[in-house]
Image 1 (cartoon, chains in turn brown, yellow):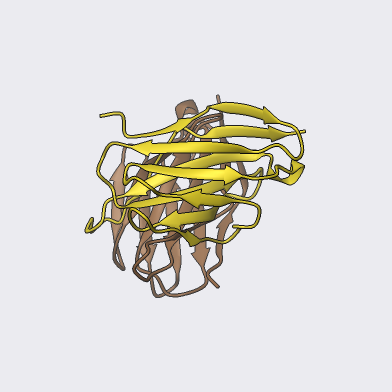
Image 2 (tube, chains in turn green, purple):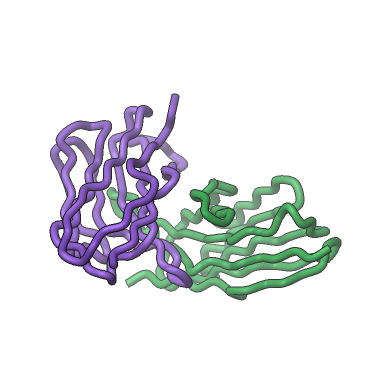
Length: 112
Length: 114
């Protein structure tokens, strides 16, 4: 059974600081997704990582995937208040049905 | 292009009542999924469909039924609602043959069972 663990689950940081959210998973997969969710809203796709060593960047966020370590990171550079949200990673379980297993999410609060 | 839509947005039920949640997508996607989201739990897959007329169980299927009579619609039914089914329900869809295998999510339905 695929397990996906995110840490930390809660992150409070100051504007301008850097931090990394980690996503570990328990079985082989080479497809991993990062989503953002604002309170009361749906999930917004941030990054799609499809191979070992994949790195994607958008603004102050950068995601990477190491399939050998079964680890993905979401790095936040010089955080701003607008980044406050819950971030989820999701791992494709493989097979032909493309089912995702989600982590529990990281609630990020960026304080001025 | 509305994407993935869900009806209703909010609903309050009493224990034992039944209801159906509707998910509709206008992107001609083959795959559709129903998830529930509970505080601190992430999203968990309830049921999914790989095409019109097909359905399959996910991680937490008990107490729910689904139907996919039309390609664009995926219905989630609760025959006898229980307080444990209080949750936010998200529908998602995916295009077959999409190399990114990306799922697109609807806005969610917030269900409270008293």
